[in-house]
Image: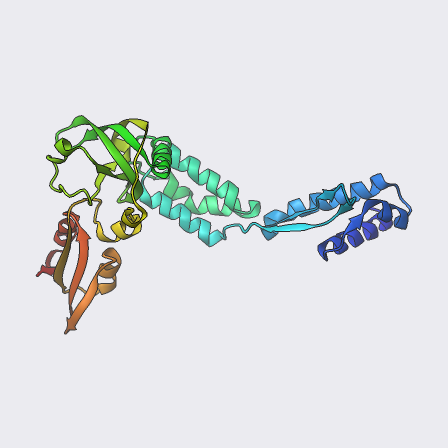
Length: 313
């Protein structure tokens, strides 16, 4: 830039940033240049602001109002994830072991590309490179994201789902028609929680009460059909996955129950984090008496895993 252009562009940019309105014809007259020159100045300012977005996380626009023949600046806050935030997300995804290796690599590449400033992308990539290289994919090796999205749409639209589901206990494929209510994640897998209305099917279940959902691993759904038929659940009776998640262990469904046990370990916080509904009833000489509200038989697995640190009351 020559000195005159530098002064002109900086002046226009400063006034735009300060909220002033810029009239192209008036600017051309003030500086003794053609209107096309002012337009090029505006284009230079737009290019500069676009390049600065990666550094500031802010998007600045300079739109042109044809009716009033003026330029003005608009700002949209588009914060980028910090290096620490994106690193934490990548680590959680890798540790989840929820996706086939090709799928997890694709997700990580997109996250880093879209959410990390360009100058930091190589650094973040290097920090997760070793863990990504040694990533152990789940044994099912199923790409299920499209299926999960279809289920999500059915949940949103309250549409029945019909599916062919691979049942592990007898290695057979069964047909189910269900009311889908939530998608949840736990211990390496994504699950569909749904309600069954077919009383004949329910005879095979431990829980006959319709208020308790059945749980299906999404990667075991062999075929999925979204039906036009819709269901209605009153707002007061809606399924709240957050409350259900607090009370279910290892995604084993079942009746709602209350348990009480003694904990002899040194880290009571680990118990309270594992069982979000847990409450300490009393503490005597480092031994805690705890109660919790839980669904189903999954809690039995957790209690057994604690060995002599837990005594069920």
